[in-house]
Amino acid sequence: MLSAFKSIPTDMDYKGQKLAEQIFQGIILVSAVIGFIYGLFIQQFGWTVYIMLAGFTVSCFLTLPPWPMYRKNPLKWQPAVPEASGENRDKPQESQKKKKHK
Amino acid sequence: MNTVLSRANSLFAFSLSVMAALTFGCFITTAFKDRSVPVDIQVSKVMIKNVDDFTGPRERSDLGFVTFDISANLQPIFDWNVKELFLYLTAEYSTKSNALNQVVLWDKIVLRGENTKLNMKDVKSKYFFFDDGNGLRNESVKGDGVCESEPKGDGICFRAASG
View 1 (cartoon, rainbow over the protein chains, first blue to last red):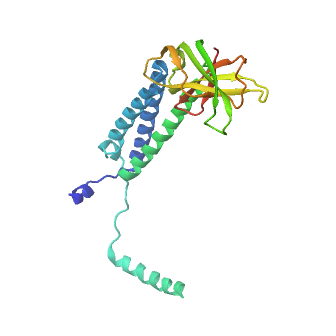
View 2: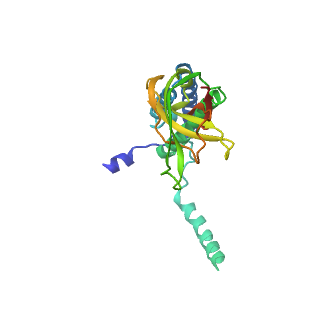
View 3: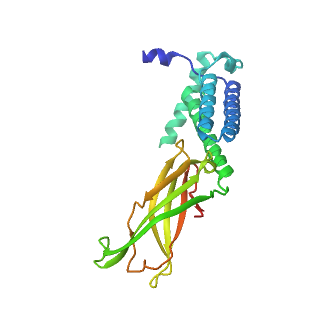
């Protein structure tokens, strides 16, 4: 069961992360302002807290799961280098590492 | 912000900071308000005895018995920063040995949501009105009703009601 949870991809790309952060900050600030004004009007701080918690829940739902709108700009990775030239680069790096450890 | 836990962490921390700012705003809007309320206190019966003082050193001291009526409307004090009110009635007087004596005679806790109109008749004092010494005879005693409000934000404010 836990492996099923771990296999769900939860990452977003960078523009998606920025969008998610802006969304949740905006929602929480708006709900804080609404809650403060409403609580000031009826003189009960409990309602301010409830409205803030509602805003928190809405922003949890909108930003925690990786919706597709956060994945619209995936990173462009470089194409993979073929293996023959990869081996040539490994050997001089190993000899340099041995010299450093002495 | 790449994993769910990291997003949840920043979301929760931001909400907590905003809640702290809201609480501060709640404090700022009510901390400097004047919270005195007119209170009507009348003493209906006073009796003084001179008995052994069992609360302290074994000497005979004056013990006063006061029965009073008190009525007040506390509704204006309950704003959104007040959780409960602690009311107490003190008697102030001066004797030969002390310039100022204050003795608490009676107190009451009023929680938010309870009845805020206070109208009590023939209330006996809850606590003993002992004087250290024999200074209660022939002394005029001034009763002072004080209400202390327990707020949700910072700061405990004292506001005296005249009586």
